[in-house]
Image (cartoon, rainbow, N blue to C red; front, side, top):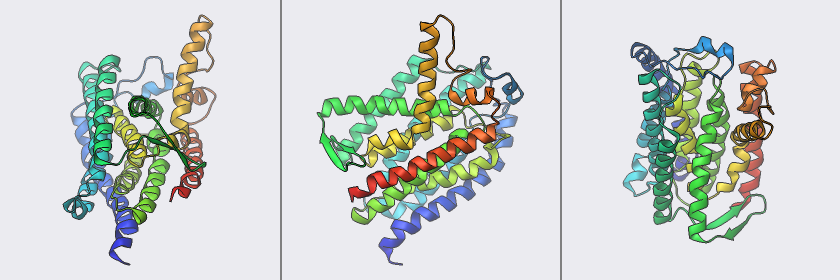
Length: 338
């Protein structure tokens, strides 16, 4: 295997394997520490009553896959970094900023023993500022254009830069919070995001054949890290990822879409995230319009299925398989770009 082939295929595979092992090890070390620190999750008062048994389960467990992926990405990408290829660090750094915002939110929840952390305005302002800085960085480095790529049609539509940047900022904030909403039952956010990371890893690897890039390291490492994390987060969960993990994952998903200059693909690979968000919007809107009636038994929609008798494992399996099918379809929708 040539050096170019090793970088295209070998390094992402090694990154995935390394992050998987690292997450398994970190989980064994960090979960007992989180218990000792009494970093227990407060359960939503308006959530399913049987979730009350989960109260006290350690939160902020997202540190497990974040730490595993971050170390592997830096180590595996070090030779390319010395050559001036820093695009993987852009995505990782952006995701880490959102992880810090999530950590602050989790810390307030744990400190005050409640299920509400930072205020909505505080989170929105911080997330919007981070999105603006990331988009500016991508534009400055030449990784982002104002030509909106249309999957399947394989065409690009030029958009005014100001319009595009405003659109992109709100897409990022919306995507991040959609992933956060998906993190409502054991393993769901991690399980749904693994196929998304596999999709981006494959697409970035294909892109690197035509244009040297190290972006594939990030989704590959996150795929492995999430796999290791699921050993502790699958039902019954021994640890929750918290906003630390879900905001990091949301930023990684949309950060990769913009770094690869194909944000519209989020409509397909992020279908579950979108459905989860729409279910909340529809529930609130219907509740207000009908003065107290509910469209779903509970929102987000994974709770509706729970209330209809679906087990957490069944919801995890179905939602993950739907995302997998969407990601396969998305692959055929964008592969014609090259």
